[in-house]
Length: 415
Image 1 (tube, rainbow, N blue to C red):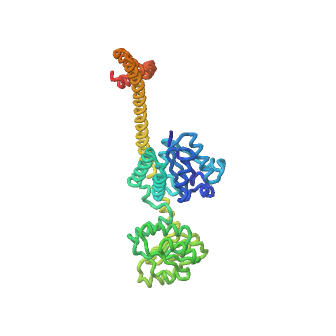
Image 2 (cartoon, helix red, strand yellow):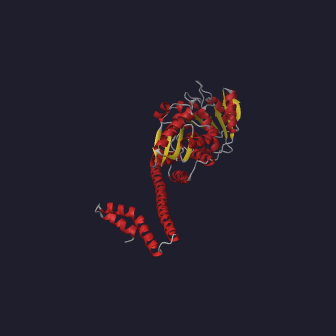
Image 3 (tube, one colour):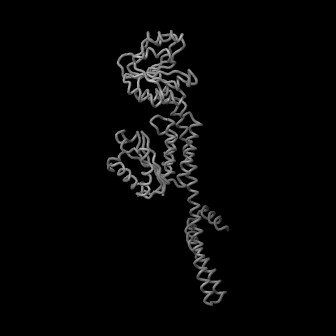
């Protein structure tokens, strides 16, 4: 039996295939049951996110092949469609891979924190489905401890590595707490949605979304309990905004120097923090010339991100050492469990021999045979049966004429 990690991710498969292999949350429970039934694996965990689908299981090489076939069949794909994009790790590599994933070292954005919660959710779903046994219970608990250690003792998540996160991090540095800060978001695409999510995570509550398409703005605003305005209402809203972050597909600037100048007068020159994530620009470059307006462009943030990526890569090397130690610890425990099983099996075998010979001796006594002869025969046969296999192995070891086997034999036999 071995631990396997089978999957595809953003490195091995295009999004068109990742979409087909993804498991919806409501599918996972039944899928785990089906997987266990179809392949007879003893443990099974399904981790499915936008960037990866991975199956962790305990089984044999032939069962690993069955899991590949099951995965293809479940998603109505052929094995030939799936196989070129799959990776398969086993034992140490599988344990280290899981720990790297949970710590954010295998993510599209190095060190991103969301994956830790997603691995925990996958583990909890498997517990509910009854596909977690002691080996995987220990593996995942060790994984969670290692991931927390990486987060606590390295800088893997300390610095922003996306322009959206960099923008929000910069805003937090300037304003401290964001709970009472007024934020105006211009645009409603993926970048602004990501900005809104980071703002919400940092405590921002006073959000307003402005967009050319009102319905799209409403859809985004509902996720974050934000207000909605049209682009034409931006000049009226601007004086209330402490933070302005813009990312649209407009070919012309939406926020001009004069508009911001008027807003600052109404704010009595209370500073305004503006971030332009659009290319071409949404905010006129001249806005940065105003005394109380602090304008950052996507280029400004990209330089911050580049420095932070380098910092995270250094932290990733440090995290790798923590993960290797974590895998060592788990594999030592696993080996100990195997040794415990070996000792148990050996003792059970000796018990079977004793029971068999004792039963025979009792039958001989019941038949009236001489008790002294019966006991002597029992002792001889019991010692011969118990010594036969060990003696054979000892002879083979002694033929090696090395000190190590002899020392081991002396220790085992207490001689």
